[in-house]
Length: 379
Image 1 (spheres, one colour):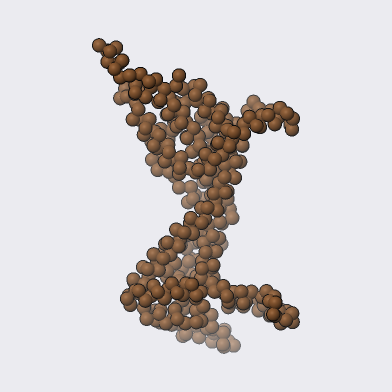
Image 2 (cartoon, helix red, strand yellow):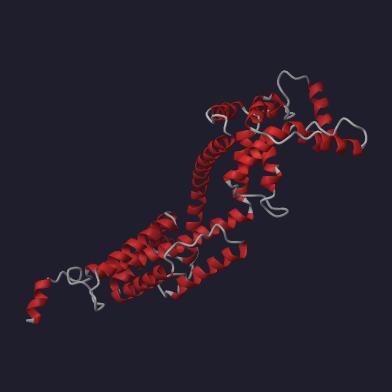
């Protein structure tokens, strides 16, 4: 018969396995995100979608409109090819210019794009493009000599902006602010009481809230990938929750051993490690270390001792026998490492409260024995 504390050891053992597996899945997700630069692309998409003038972008896209004659379309297409990148730069929207702004682009090294922008840097880049951006696109193109073009750029720079000059730039049609954002920034401007610092702080607060929503959308997209990685890891390591639970139930000492290791792990790692900031090699090492840690537990995991007999009745029966345990493991691991880290902390604290000072178990939790029996035995 398994007492209350032994049952708690069983639950802690399962939770610890789920936690280690979820870290592997999280590491695989981060590995994928780093390889395809997923966070940077997500941030760039938000900036361009929010700040580009979509109406103008559609107008200059070069797509064939129903009312546009075929000859005019061909002329426009040829003209775009002849002008090349120069025309593309000329027609770039505010979002594209913010993304390429030196204050944003300068946050990373060469050939790398930024995946996080501090709120102060973003607002500075935004105001810089609103105030200077429209003039930069037209300067240095009227003179034939490169020296004259450079001189025009030097002499044509605006003075540094203040609150009132920013207000004039916001109303300037050449800035090409998207209508939804123009309404927002005009309202923020009018509520800043002619104080530039207040104006910046309000924009920073708006950017923070937008990033929280964008981060939530990004996490929802990654949940399906996490589920897919949970399937791969569960089947690859052959983690059958039902078999594990039976193993812990039949072997209380094994359950206690794993629960003790979970307690030691939490003691050495009071806070969950951040995986997102690691480089490629570090992420691979994390995955390898967690797999080795699971192997060191010496539990009935893996495919050792199993032989695939092909698409026969015996083979399919083996799969169906494992299927319920696999499904439980997959959905448990999909909950994520933060969930299991918090759960483990609560369970380990509950386990510590159930122990007596000399290391034994609390009689009220073990085997249903009454405290009064101990007093009778002593007497």
